[in-house]
Length: 293
Image (cartoon, rainbow, N blue to C red; front, side, top):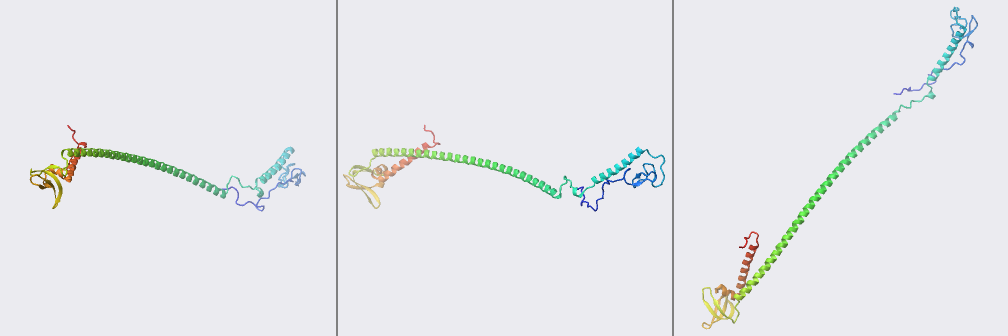
């Protein structure tokens, strides 16, 4: 709380204090002593010259030395002047009143409070922002590591897939090479077998003298004249010396004779041979196949 009064004093309430410049002294105006005629202050009780008592009308016996009386009078006058001066200087004056500079006003107090609250709010906001930035940085770093991990896993998966594709392609290429090699061997075996068959069992030609054997062991010898079909049955006609023309159904011929007369039967025979040979070659190439002795 302020020590200043709520309302300043006015001229009507302030004591009317002033220095009496013509205050009576031993030589100035006052009342004369009836005893010695010396002047004394109007409110003096004793005459400092002769010791006369203004109230009793009697003299104080003995009296004081003149020098002492003079010093007493001067001291009294000086005391009155000093007291008056002190009172005048110590009493506040309206035109000179200045509120203490170190006591803030209510507006200043409110402004300081608002400034402190604003500072605290800014510090809190800065702290929260720093924490949020730190958390965001941690989340970003975590996301980066996760992305790197995911990218590494993806790259590994792609590398494994590429390796698998390469292995599959290599296996397919090897299988294709093996197939081609097998087909080449098969073709070679086919040519070899057909050449040997053409050499050992050549097809009968028209006009050629042939021996036709049947499944029951009969042999017909003559010149091959014709291949025909009657009632859905194919036959070969030969001209013999004794019996004349004979027609022998091809289905009644033994396998060797039929292979030389029936091209379809011959082709089927060759195909069966090649299929059997191919199965044997595949079995030989199988990893589980027993090694040849």
